[in-house]
Image (cartoon, rainbow, N blue to C red; front, side):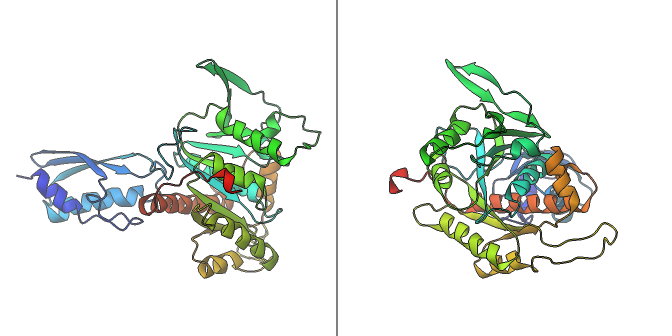
Length: 366
C-alpha cells in the first residue's frame, strides 16, 4: 500500500530549480490523495507563467515512480499562486502582486519597446499583466498597442469613478497619451507630472494582476521618486544598448535603485539592439553598438542578465503599427522576448523568496 507519507518523502527529492529547495520545504504541494496505486496531488507554482512547469511536473512523476512504486499511476495537477514582493499593508493596488519598473539611464535605447513586448510575452505565458506608461512627457505605449483612438471608459465604485484601462493582446494598458491631445506638448512642472502618475495608480480599476510593468522615463528624476514613494516596487529592470555611453548611464540607473533610501532590488539588465541580423543572411550577426556590453556589466556589478534583443526591422514596424512583435508565434525576435520574460519571471520569484517585501520610500527624504 502506498501511503501519503511515502509520497511526501519522495517529493522531498524534487528541487525547485530556481529556489534551490525541495517542493515540500517550499510548501508547494497540496491535496495529496492515495487510492491503491493511484496517486494524485497539486503543485502550486510561484507564477502561472512559470517557464519550468513541464520540468517540475515530470520530476514529480519520476520521484513517485523511483522512490515509492514503479507501478504507481501518478497524476500531478499544476496550479499557481503568484508570489508578491510588495508589502501586504499597502492599500494602493492591493490586488497587484508585483510592480516592476522598466527603466533606462538614457533615452533612445528602446526601453518602451522592450517594456511593451515584455508585457505581451508575459501575457502569452498565462500571467495577468498591466502596463503603465509613466513617461509623462513622451508617452508612447498607446501607440505601440494601437490604442491611439480608443476611448477610455469609467466605472463607479463606492461613490468614486475609476478609469478602465484599455486591454489589448492580454495586457491592460494606461497611458497619459490616451488622455491628451496627441499633437500638443505637455508643459507640466514636476509636481503636476507626479500627480498625473499617481492618478494612473489610484484612479484606475486595475483588478487582479500578477505583474504590473511601469515604463519609466529615461534618467533618474521626479517620476522615479514619485513611483517608489507612491507604491512598493517589487524590483527594477534596466534596459541599455551595449555601447559604453549607454552603459555609463545604465550604471547610474542601477545605483539609484540600490540607494539605501530607495532599496529596490534590480531584477536584471536587458541588452537591446544587441546585434543586427539581415533577413537575407539569417545566420550572420553584426555587433553595431559593441558586443555583450550589458552581459559584462551585469557580471561586474552582480546583477542578473535577462537577455539580449536584436535590432531588426520587425520590432520597429510592430511599434509603429500597434502590433508588438512579441505576438509572433514563430520568430527569432519573439523567442528573444520570450526568453527575457522567462528570466524576469524567475528572478522575480527568487527575489520574493529571498528578500523582504519592498516598502514605500519616504517622500520627505527627497
